[in-house]
Amino acid sequence: MTTPRIDLVHPGDLAPADLASWNELRVTTATAANPFMSAEFTQAVGRVRPDTRVAVLRRGRRSVGYFPHQRGRWGYGRAVGLGVSDCQGAVLEPGVHLEAQYLMRACSLNAWEFNHLESGQDLFLPYATGQFASPVVDLTAGFQRYERHLREHARGFLKSARAQERRMVRNLGPLRYVHDERDPAALRALISWKSAHYRRTGRRDPFAQPWITRLVHLLADTAAPDCSGILSVLYAADRPVAAHFGLRSRTVFSCWFPSYDRALATYSPGRVLCLRMIEAAAASGIHLFDFGRGEAAYKNSFKTGDLLVHEGALRTTGPGAALHWLRREPVGAAHRLVRDHPALKRAALRALSAVGTARGR
Image 1 (cartoon, helix red, strand yellow):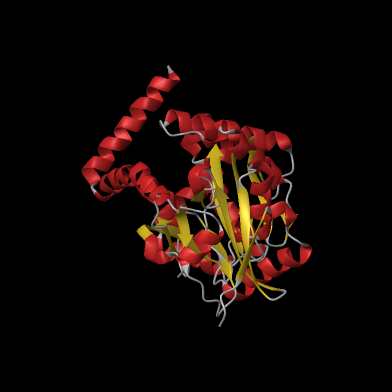
Image 2 (cartoon, rainbow, N blue to C red; image 1 turned 120 degrees about the vertical axis):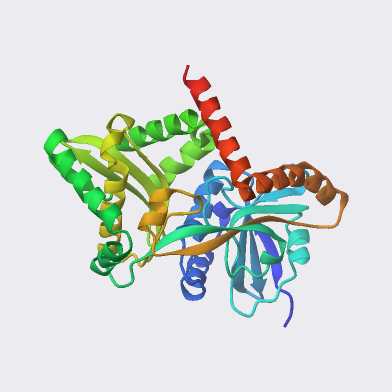
């Protein structure tokens, strides 16, 4: 079969037929239609990042695939929304045969970095240098079946969450949960809590980058079947105590930015919020609740299984690609060394904590 023709366009210039074709391909070919892989997510990133492009693969007049990416200086490419995107790759019609180097040349890229490449992306998986678990909750059988799973596999965790719920009611007032909150003040409170958490733990605050803040506010107003922003808030006597902003498609809920009022940390409000979110997600037709890559004890308690995501970089053979390797690979190798050795990882976490303490002074 002939190699598809490739046209490069800004996501804002995609025709309505392409948007529909893109999302239809995701629904019919992906085992989990993650909203980060939707046309709407790439369009939102395109509105806040002018370097966003989509390679549209065509056979004749028919579109057979889409490869969203960002292109920086010297032809260095990145997955769309790299740093905040939790699912990455290309959207291809089954049977499309494409050489990775041909795609790179067509996009004028020397390299393309990814850190949340979904499994099944056979075009890019040979270039992965690491893989990570993304804890998930299977809700295909409904919330009651999931609750039985928790009683069987995390009974103490569930019992503690319910007890904390009752404590909040006794000491703070009646609880109210809003699954899809539209009050802008609640979103501002969440961003404030989350930024403070990043600074306190010595980590880079993504909200210090204006484009990320703009992206979150833009997605908060997005309500499309394949990508909707969902702000979930737990109130105690009308006081917000925990909140989360994430994305959903028709069947997948992707966690993104959770946080809570630190003054109420002893009540574990984040845990209570998460349980309410999973129940509401199941009631709204969600089949898979994805916590996203990253280690956390609460994720392991809530999860029913794991997906795998991958990181790495696809490079060409020219001098630009060699320079990219020199700039990125030593740092990447150091990160992998720390991650793979518990003692080094503990030391790194202590160092981050010390940085966070110093910031707070």
